[in-house]
Length: 229
Image (cartoon, rainbow, N blue to C red; front, side, top):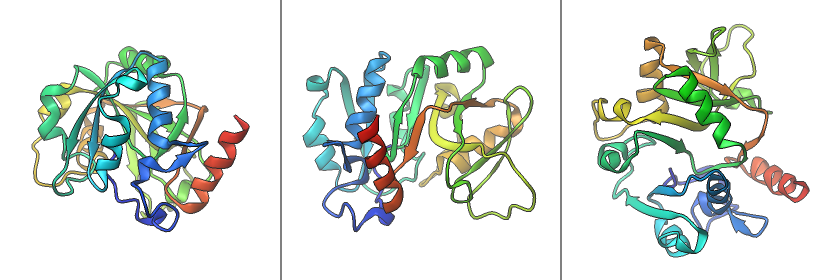
């Protein structure tokens, strides 16, 4: 999902879309693609919108990076899940959904193995972070089945685990194709939360390096941390 406006980062990266923010001399999206390629995930669909031409011109068909890239351009904002109505026939039976503002270095094989073991429809990458009050928190049972989600900004009137939705998922295509789409869809609210009562959403725990660049301070933190990796 590489079509966001990146409003909070506008002063830092006014000349480019958020997934093209530079980290260690390369766009964030480059780092994502290289980590995916490391685990054999090379068939990619980039959903682009705002300044999407920069992404397409940089990566083209992905051949120079050892991957195969297709593009879907949103002519108008469709939310974080609206594009699925248009690309469903291009998705494999099991696929990853990744937001374009996250830097990560992680083992994707472990996450997909967990997803197959649980036999759910969606697996959410969950981890602790430094800003849980500005993040969506997950509530789970003893089997790591997600039983609730507390959105950032909602009242939190008791103690909760620092178990944050990291914005990276494994999903089953039949879950996507069965969803009643409308003009604009929020992936987390309209798809993930809708499935929680069915008991088919699980939380995969990871303490690997995963951090979003959604604000200037977090962007700076990621830049500094990557220098030390």
